[in-house]
Length: 330
Ligand code: UT7
Image (cartoon, rainbow, N blue to C red; front, side):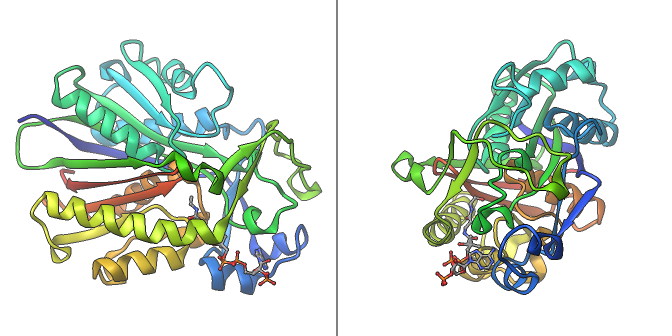
């Protein structure tokens, strides 16, 4: 049975660091509150004209992943990009990436699945490779959340950041690769996290951002409780589906929305925090980009070796959530 394997990872984040201290000047918050309730110390914010638009960051991350994979852009058949902040409503941000990479053979499209966009994309590309529809695929998660943040809402603006990550997939006939992907959605809870029509006022210290004509609203506490249950449940079924136990998992790579959520999920799965990848303190919640950025950093730090099992878990607007078990192949 053919499946896809990951042969390259790449990521990028904007240069501009926005610290919790700086946020104290924008909304009624404190460094202490943000760290205690979320684990976030700083986040990266894209600047206009610096190659940090969603598709530009996606292109940078993709080039790094392609370089590691030693695959040329012309050999890519599919570009799938998870994003809720494409450069434009249409065409897709993936098409801008295709143009920038000169990946002329690729079919390119975006996936809108909230923070789960990358895992949804991974599942689509994995299935396309398994059925022989495509050979080499680029799966990206990229966001410019700063452009849809309500900078007057302290309950959300302290959480979000910008960045991009990507992986290159090729066919595997061996034991390694993407062993399974598990996706779920529940539209009944759409109103826990959604966009609404209102351009937010960009604070003076962030005047390098051009806001989009919509903002983001979130019922954080309800979402928190729901996400712990959904993440733990889908991760447990992914393990069971592959006949694995928590002890087999070398690294849990969770969506980075809140350190307390990550710890609660790890505890439910009985995976010690030493085997959980956390970088939320540096980037905050970058939606679709959190998992591919974390995966790239873990890979480059040598935390995953060939044959290790990684468990990816995600949760986001929709509601959407998902998990994937990967037998590492780089
Ligand atoms: O990525 C997609 C999925 N996203 C998530 O899963 C996010 C899930 N939610 C969360 O991470 C957390 O719910 C938050 C970090 C958003 C909020 O933490 P919380 O522990 O759920 O706090 P809360 O909303 O219950 O608010 C507690 C208090 C409130 O004050 P009162 O009513 O107790 O006086 C808030 O007004 O904290 C207040 N608060 C703040 N205080 C200082 C809310 N935001 C802030 C802030 N600084 N930034």
